[in-house]
Amino acid sequence: MIEAVGLTKRYGDKTAVDDLSFQVRPGMVTGFLGPNGSGKSTTMRMILGLDTPTAGHVTVNGSPYRSLPNAPRHVGALLDAKAVHGGRDAYRHLLSIAQLSGIPAHRVDDVLELVGLSEVAGRRTKGFSLGMGQRLGIAAALLGDPQVLLFDEPVNGLDPEGILWVRNLMKSLAAEGRTVFVSSHLMSEMALTADHLVVIARGRLLADMSVREFIAANSAGFARVRVPDTGPQQREALTAALTRAGAQVLPEQDGALRVTGLPLPRISDVAHEAEVRLWELSPHHASLEEAYMRLTQGMVDYRSSADPQIGMRPAPVPGRSDGWDPDPGPGAPFQPVHAADGPTFSKDPR
Amino acid sequence: MTTERTQQIPGQAPRTPSYVSPIPIRQANLGHALASEWTKIRSVRSTMWTLGIFLALVVVLGCMVAGLIGADTYLNAPYTMPAFFGLLLGQMCLVSLGVLVVSSEYGTGMIRTTFTASPQRHRVLAAKIIVFFLVAFVTAAVAIAVVGLYTQLTVDAPSNPAWLPTVFKGALYVSLMGVLALAVGSMMRHSAGAITTMLGVVLVPAILPPFLLFNESLVDVAQFVSDYNAISALSLIFEGSPSTGHGGAQTALLAGLTVVACAGAFAAQANRDV
Image (tube, rainbow over all chains, first blue to last red; front, side):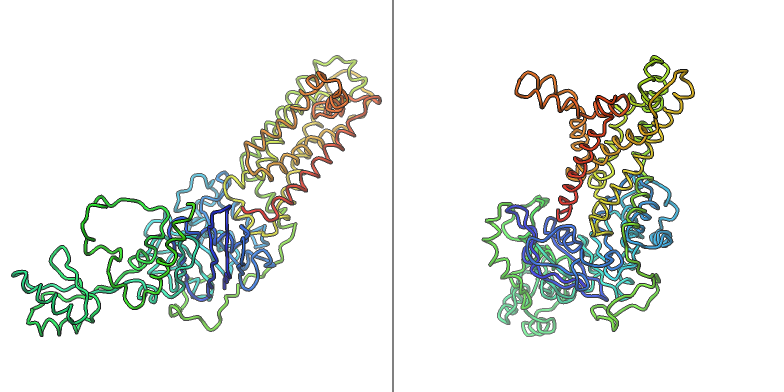
């Protein structure tokens, strides 16, 4: 169990973490999401007592990390896979950590076996690939067989087999009743691994809810409707009928219609009453990625402008998943956060 | 750890919410930290390089010089005297190692792993100081003793002063210099910066006195710096006479500085972000 209360970290006039309160419960994998520079790593360092909060506090199993009597037996962490002395071999790197925490030396062999590094145990870590480094970091986190595990970007640099292994490892650790707190940028991976989400941006809490609730709250599911392409009349008739029935209808580039605000059977009924035949009526379920993109839109510090058409479009291109949908749906409680906090962010010295 | 366990229903907390490890929990203490630091210092090449060069400088240079020194010199100097020349240069090896023991952890980020494994940061620093001091002291003592033995066995000259105390004092002085470097490295957290600072600490006082003499009011300061700089101190330990002393006061000054620097290092790391 990790509990943060009003956690705040300022570096000069820059606020990295701003009044963050959340709980990470045992028995499930909790994903920790946020754009680059949103304060995820700073938060993790504060949980581990490496950085001292400017205000607020964070406890692990009820105690601040640095007050835990034998911290590595309670908490294991992978912060940065490259944070090892490259000149030391993997075995003795882990041995030094085990000795420091009073962990029996045979655990080193156990965790090396577990992460699949037994064969390279005698090699200096300088020559390790990113994936091997991640495995070594995971081994270090598991050394103390702790109740609480923190992983910062654990699948970075891992091959598909490694990613699958980490996913199953996280789940099995959680199933054993441990608290697993894992940050990642890979939304598809989080959707498969995490049960619960803590989402932050610019150091502030945006969401603390289950993955299912998060997707429901932060994405508008819509229906894709296609009519026979015999002429524009059918489409216009259906658009008018659906709009009268209370739906929002937007044309997509390929001639289909994107309909929100009405359940699928009702769309079918409306079409029937308007005497329009349907060639397609399909539900579109938003992914975690879409929900995340929608929530964190406008709160990203380092945005790329990879969109070659930026500024050249008269209207948003339908089908894009960045949540341009005019109807945020009933469950978008965080939309006001953007509006209310917008001016504050624009004053931000960054 | 078994990975084949029944899957918990996602989102639902299990009946027994906390996992209990079957491995018995032992309270970690300074002994554990010492074992850890001993593993660390043994398992990197920088230790082998710096100590290897130190040994080579002191022993090889010492044995070469031993035969070149006039036999009558040994009447008033111990047989370990030839080790002085190697120690002058070699102390920078111990300074480098002292700095690297701490700063390499900050440089690589390993320090986060270390402080996660032992949030009792003072214990880690204490273990580093003790392990480094012992390693440096034993290495230096062996090097000086080898030179002393070689000289005694090969140089056909009588010697009055006992050379065993100089093994102890010489090794103590250069090891303290290394611990001072370790403390500086811990406060600066930067290898190159700390080593350069320590180069200044060793060399500047030795070069400074002639420049201080340009101003008459600084004559006393110049005399003090001239008497107490690292090079004078080592030379007094090996060639001191009853009138000049045998470097005891100089060693005490270095020990005092080292204690102050270590206190600073302990205070600085206590609550600093890493």
